[in-house]
Image 1 (cartoon, rainbow, N blue to C red):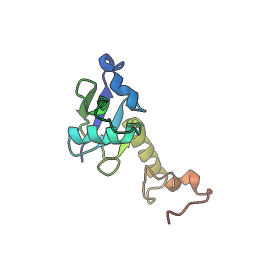
Image 2 (cartoon, rainbow, N blue to C red; image 1 turned 120 degrees about the vertical axis):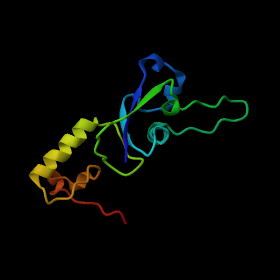
Image 3 (cartoon, rainbow, N blue to C red; image 1 turned 45 degrees about the vertical axis):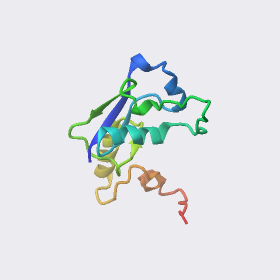
Image 4 (cartoon, rainbow, N blue to C red; image 1 turned 60 degrees about the vertical axis):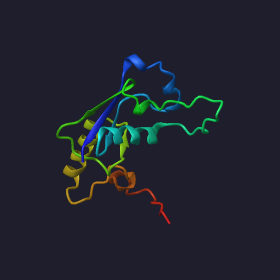
Length: 130
């Protein structure tokens, strides 16, 4: 599955559309297409808001705007989750963490998004998801 890097453009950093996003820096997304990567980013970062009424102007969502965000597919990137996974951690850090964890415990399954699976958390109580 492709991994995309979404980078907000400096030229649009003061655009009003950014007022509805809690994150305004680069992110990495596992997605089938660049368009889906944009939609997943909107889903991850847009603040909850009420729908516009007929007398209000609808708000533009920044992550789907080509004028506000550049999308680049990362060649040879190792996918780091299921489609729709979004991270603000630089991809190089995720891959370095994965490599270090595999070197330390090669038989241990790697789950980058379940902190309870990391070796340092073995002494912490685990919460069930019942």
